[in-house]
Image (cartoon, rainbow over all chains, first blue to last red; front, side, top):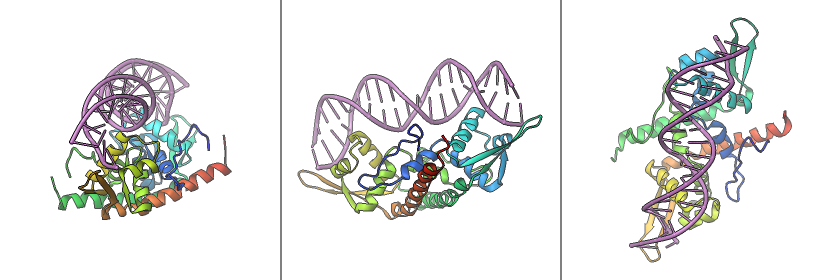
Length: 120
Length: 120
DNA sequence: CCGTATCCCCCCTGATACTG
DNA sequence: CAGTATCAGGGGGGATACGG
């Protein structure tokens, strides 16, 4: 793996790659992009802007490129005017979905646990 | 849930809490701390410094407090001289372990996939 | 329609020194 | 042993304008 891509960190004596996954997911909009791609199969650039209204074009481009660089998503370019680009999950990206789903579940659980035990 | 704790973001029309989990895990050393607590049951402050030599005291304190604030870990203080403090996972924190484990697996898979298809 | 290119600010992190 | 306090830097992210 190229050294300039990810800074791997060992989990002390054990070798674990949680950090690798976390680093790939790091970025304010990455999980949102992946989640939407999971729900929609294929998404065009402007569709993303509709689905995630708060994101800026710059950020959208950047996060999409990061995800593509790491092989989680790919884009298909239709050479036509006006241009049309479709983004979709790769097999590698799809393998992340169960984890994202588990994180969603845990997050819901976390939120609930605070509703009941609001110790503040 | 206190508003000053987490900035929840909806996954477009769907309500998903991936971001919540990601935000709780955000921080350079959080996953490392949780992983080590999973492998050691109970860890003292100075033991963390041995297990994660690169971390500074300030960061260790800070990340431990964040995790405790969100209820993933707890500490037991033994009132004695010199002081002794033990950190351990709460049930909520333990429920995160399978996810961290899955992230470890996926990370290893990711690294492997680049060993074979080094397209650079 | 699908992006790039700049500028700028905030906050996370690190280094270092001090304390009960 | 188990922390706090303070200062400084760097990078991620936002706003805005421009290009093929």
